[in-house]
Length: 406
Ligand SMILES: Cc1ncc(COP(=O)(O)O)c(C=O)c1O
Image (cartoon, rainbow, N blue to C red; front, side, top):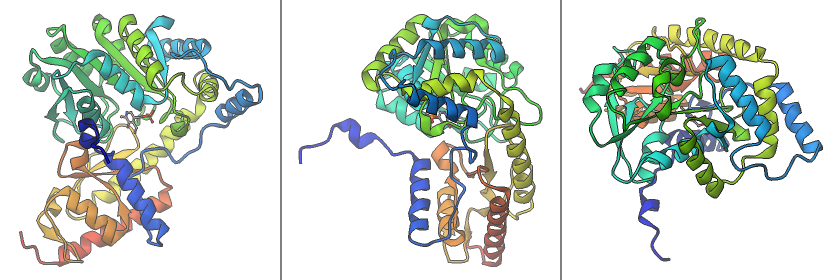
């Protein structure tokens, strides 16, 4: 076989998808595994949204649309951005794509040249560094700490900006930490960025609706309108509207970058799925009450899990403000030996031991650039989460009973 392109040898498959696949395989061969690695809500797409998709099929709305998005969906997006974020956009400032993943890639392709630096605060969504590398950019990480609530502070940002920085990837609410930046915290970062006019801000606001305790997620461009000519807002339908499989997302930003993203997407994926777009209009303009219901369910699961985890010897977690993930500190387990004799020197070892010995699929912090942690998803019924907590507890008890060789 002829050689593959160098690029093909550099791409790593998504570690979260890989963990889900391993858990699914173990289940298939009869092992009892609780998939705490899931990256999607366990609810279903709201009935009115599904009905809009079905109606689209029945009315033969099944052909290509405009490659940058069906105009009525763009109008619905503009209405959403005004209604929820107080921001005003023109249709030429909106591009629709087949899921946030490819829309973020199109944004990076539009603003980052080979060798350009892209700042990625850690912990980060696993895909950002790989996408930056695919296009020849250089990811520059800044490890935020639990002490700062896993948030990038202005002084941290100042320390990593250089004359080669072309973009900052900002993600709030954050996957995996669940951190949600306040408007003041975003404003403070914007103050720093004002001094770096060549830097783009790619802000991934996909989990906007998944916030707890009455919070509202702040949109970067709403807080820092003075930087609007270099902010690319990414948002979509996957998480908040429970539409992961429909593959629909959008970006809002300056006309030139949005045109470039539309051109790129038209060459990569063509027009987004017509049926999903019809459903997307209903999602944005129809009944929104399920957003609150979903928030309440996730919030009560979060409270349950955080309380249980904090009672488990060697584990600790601070309560996340949003998303459906809980990012657990397992530092006190490192150096210890599991009941099956596995020496756990890293969070990857912990994840491996939990999968093999406790039947729990979790994603190690190293996948998100932050150790020693592991991420669990609370996208499971509270009874199943309870069972998962029982297993964690038993694993910890067995662990502590073994003699540490550390
Ligand atoms: C922070 C973040 N951004 C983007 C995505 C991708 O979303 P989509 O399914 O719309 O491609 C995900 C999915 O897990 C995510 O967690």
